[in-house]
Length: 214
Length: 266
Image 1 (cartoon, helix red, strand yellow):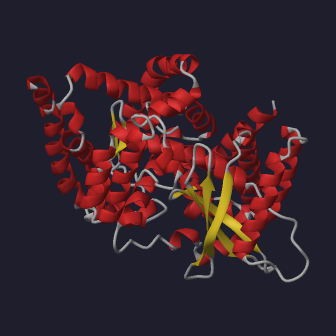
Image 2: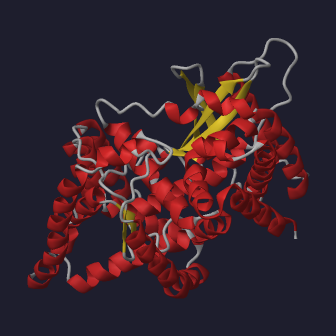
Image 3: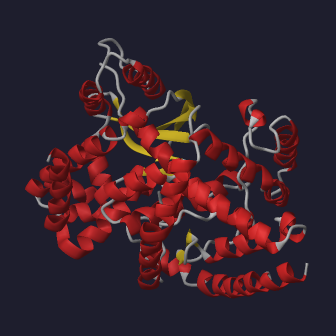
C-alpha cells in the first residue's frame, strides 16, 4: 500500500501489515450488545466482540450489506468515536468551534464506517486470538490480539480502551504492528488543516463521504 | 566475479553518505521533537526534507501508476495466486542470512537458531523454500534487517527520507539496506550479476503484485497519501526496533490525553 513502488523489504512488510490494518479493522468494527449485569472488563469485551464479529463475517446467509449494518451498530457501541476524533485532531481540536466539532465527529465516524465497511469482502477466514491486557499508567488498558491465518498471519493488533463515565470500556485507538490509527489520521489531518483550516478538513471529509454514497 | 564487485561500490558510497547524514542530523532531532508537531517519542514525525521527499514520492507514484503497477497487474493475471505466494516464500527463504546475521547482532541467538531451523525445514520439505511448512509449524520468519539492528544499538533513524523507487526510508535504514545488500546477501557473490538482478526484479514485481489491492485501497482512502505512508512507516519501524530493544522506550502516553483547557468548549 504504502509506497508507490512498495519495493524495499521493509515497505513490503509494512504494506502487508496494512492489509492487516484492514483486517484488524474488520475485527475492530466489532462489539457486543452489552450484558446488563456487572460491566465486563476490557479484555472480556474484546473477546466477546471478536466472537460476535467473526460470527457475522462467517455467516454466509447474510449479504455484505446486512453484515455492514450489523457491524456498524456494534462499532457504535464499542468505539468512543468522539474521543477518537478529538485525539486525531490533537491540539488542532482547539481550532474548531462547538458546531465544527460536532460536525467533524459525525463526518469522521461516517468516514471510518465507509472505509472499513468497504473492506469487509476481503475477509478470508482469519481468526483472532485475544492474548491479554496491559494496564497503562493513567487508567487506560491495552488489549492485545493476534491475527491467525490468512495473509496477515501473526499480525499483532492492540486495542486501546478507556472507561467512560457510564463505567463501560470503549475503544479509543487501534494499533496494528505498532501503527496507530489515531496517529496516522493525525498526521494526515494536520497536513489538510494546515492548508485549509477546520472548514477545509470538514469539507474534505464530506467530499469523501459523498463520493461513497453516490 | 569482477562485475558484482564493481556494482557494489555504489551502495558503499551511499552508505558512507548516509552515515554522514545520520551523524549530521542526530543533533537537530531534539529541537525538532520539542517543536512537537502533535506528538513526541516514537510517534513523532520528523521530516525536515519534506519538499524533497514529496517530490521523490510524487515521482515514485508516477512511476508506479504508469509502469510498475501495470506490469504487476499483468503478472497478477498470468501467475496464479498460490504460485505468487510460493515465490514470495522462496525469496523469504533466500533472505535467511540477513535474518540470522541481524538476529545475532541484536543479541538474540535463540531467534537466529529458530530462523536457521526454518531455513533447513523449508529448503528441504518446503521444496527449496516455495512452501512454508516451518511457518505452519509455528516458526515465524523474524524479519530482521540491519536498519533495525542499528536501531537496537541506539542509532536514531534520523529524518524521514523517501528513496527513488525504493520508497520510505531514513538515513539509518538506508545504511542498513546497503549493509544487508553487501554483507548479508551472499548469493550475489556466487551467481552472475544478471541472474541476481533478475531475481531482485522478480521479487519486487511479485511483491508489488501481492500488494495490488492494498495499495489501491490505501490510495483511495487516504486524505494525504504522502502523510499516511510517512506516519505508517515511521511508526512501524519504531515498533520493530522497540520490540527488540533491551530497554524499550516507553510509548508516548501524552499522545492519548488532551490538554485541560480543551474541555472549555465541551
